[in-house]
Amino acid sequence: MKHRFSILFVVLVMLMALAPSISAQDGVTIKYVLWDTNQLPSYQQCAEVFQAANPGITIAIEQLGWDDYWTGITTGFISGEAPDVFTNHLAKYPEFVVLEQLADIQPLVDRDGVATDIYYPGLADLWARDGKRYGLPKDWDTVAVVYNKAMLEAAGIDPAIMQEWTWNLEDGGSFQETIAALTLDANGNNGLSPDFDKNNVTQYGFVQDTMGGAYGQTQWSPFAVSTGWTFNNGAWGDEYYYDDPRFIGSAQWWADLSLEYGYAPSFEEISSLGSAALFQSGNIAMTINGSWMIGTFLGSEFEVGFGRLPAGPEGRRSMFNGLADSIWVGTEHLEESWSWVKFLASAECQNIVGESGVVFPAIPEAAAMSQQMRADAGVDVSAFVDQANEENGTFLFPIADFAGEISTIMGEAMDSIGLGQAKAADVLPAANEEINALFQ
Image 1 (cartoon, one colour):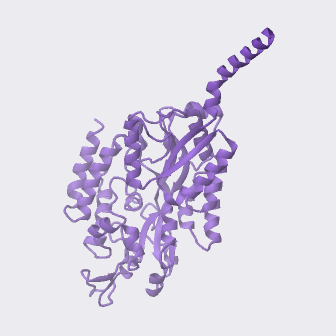
Image 2 (cartoon, helix red, strand yellow; image 1 turned 90 degrees about the vertical axis):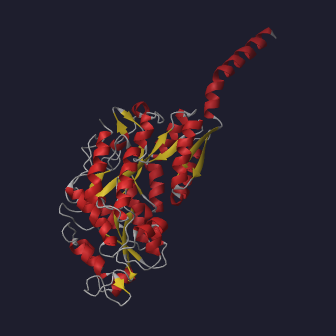
Image 3 (cartoon, helix red, strand yellow; image 1 turned 180 degrees about the horizontal axis):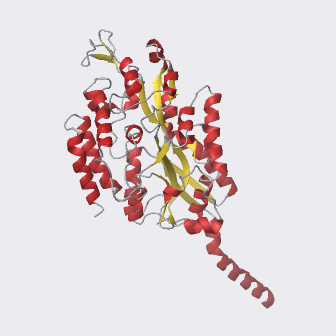
């Protein structure tokens, strides 16, 4: 009996020693949050595959709209109830780094030998700073022209023009000429006619996606950067160039499509209803938007096409933005969260996302799957992919400190231009000076 007691005692001691590791692997729930409802099914599928391989971990996915999403994240930081893992954006993460709310995953990347060169060039570097890493790439996006096929056909305009059209600051090039030809007033005159009445438009040739604030990803950035202009002096830069005449001219041209020429709705209307909804209303011929909106536009009641951006003086340019999944520094389940982030960034999960065609994953092979899925459905999305693959066809999102302050300053300045309350030349130099003072 004494011998049995000794054995039982040893077993109990061993079980007590193992208890912490067992609890760490069993019954752990990782809260994961994203904002895009269109991507939810794909990531739910990824979660199911992950959970099957990791039976001790449950992934609880929550989807919130864009504005509620960031409010929830920041509120969670303060209350200590932030999600373990969340989809992060380059416009937000510099501030989160300063607030020390993101876990540095570089030691885990090194420990597990995770490759960071399997993604499109530059995407992984966006999430690293000073030897630390705050996320692994999940997808990428570029912008392209979205057009109403019936309207172009009615105007006798071949979409093939988008392979060669141009833009410049002097007269807007053949891009502006096409917009004008697609704009009609109540008397049937288009924007090229001397009798065109810009105050009585029944069909607009174009709709801008707002004034674009500090970044203009789907707005003015393809045009301004195509002049040779750059946002700042590089990644994590401390000097901005919003006072450059090339940017000032691009911003004013963007606003004047509505204010001066009448080829686009007013910015009051755009701000109220949104450019996508206005385009889908059926009385606008073209817009510019991001690849993440492909599914939304395909849901229009008319047939849409996707075309190349116009080539500016320095060629075609699109912002190359990429999202990543980050781990909240306050998570109680770092290892399990890391396992999930590692899986999200893997070919296995990104292939699942690619097969859905909703977005273009960060791994090129998975992005090709997304393009093929759309092609099989009769939808040509090559305008977005060709832009990403074109030499010098993209520029990286301008990450920097003080992103929140920069967005506020430029948002107010750009809105005043779009509303016709001020000229770009009058407000942008002062806004730029205020921004650069942040870094002093």
